Length: 132
Image 1 (tube, rainbow, N blue to C red):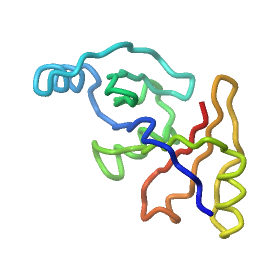
Image 2 (image 1 turned 60 degrees about the vertical axis):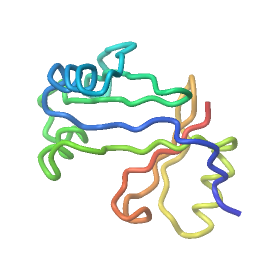
Image 3 (image 1 turned 180 degrees about the vertical axis):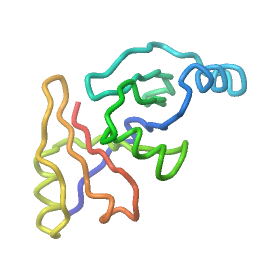
């Protein structure tokens, strides 16, 4: 059955210095930032559109030691943080994964629904499923 992923929705990279990372991706790779915004989850984000997908650079914006972006940076350094896969039916995808005894969060969100798959089920990758 599977989750019926339809596309890579976006990739999130954890960075120590958002200004420096923005400069790197603009100057070295010719990407153009479309927006920069704070996130209530305790991080600041910069968005770079890539066709139907986008690259999101994130850095912690609070002092919370349990901030997941901060924890990623402390444990693994800068690099890939989340791979977000688009799915047509998030509830069905979650049910499919749970039927395989895979831990996945309940779908949540207003504008779009998201769930996170346990990194133990994806070889250490923070995998997000999103239905827009």
